[in-house]
Amino acid sequence: MGKARHLDRIDRAILRELQREGRLSNVALARRVDLSPTPCLERVRRLERDGFITGYVALADPALLNANTVAFIQVLLTNTSTENLRAFNREMRTLPEVETCHMVAGGFDYLIKIRCADMQHYQRFLGEKLAAIPLVAQTHTYVVIEEVKSETAIPLHNLPG
View 1 (cartoon, helix red, strand yellow):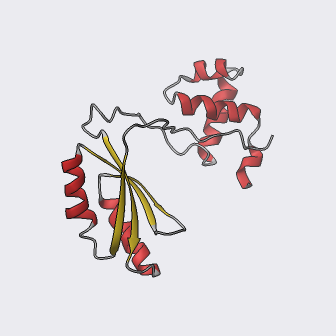
View 2: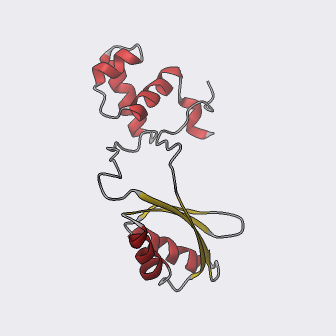
View 3: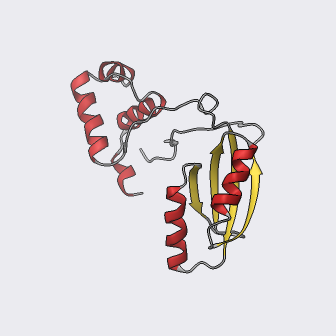
């Protein structure tokens, strides 16, 4: 558990509020977590310094950005030597359509999530980019029909304290 032991009730409240609304002013945040502004700001800075807060982002609307088609793709590599895994990881980091890429245990090697404009864009991605990587032996795609739940916040209910 490591660092999680150092988060008290107020630290967890700060993280919960900032994950909901990252642009919250320090005064508003302090009010929500029942602190005065100065100690609240000190706690936020400590959470940033200690790596609990790694950055702040704006969440964009994929439909307005022409990226509303989502697919999950299982990828099986030709073999999983350390060098092949590293090479595949490097390739994934260069592809703008790839939103997430996870090495997994089980019947395939990677699960990637992509965002595309439409099915034609997906087809080009699959044929011209993913299948063109020599390490890829096989893929299986699952196109999302409806996004039922999508969270960006990390759950804090499992933390001790």
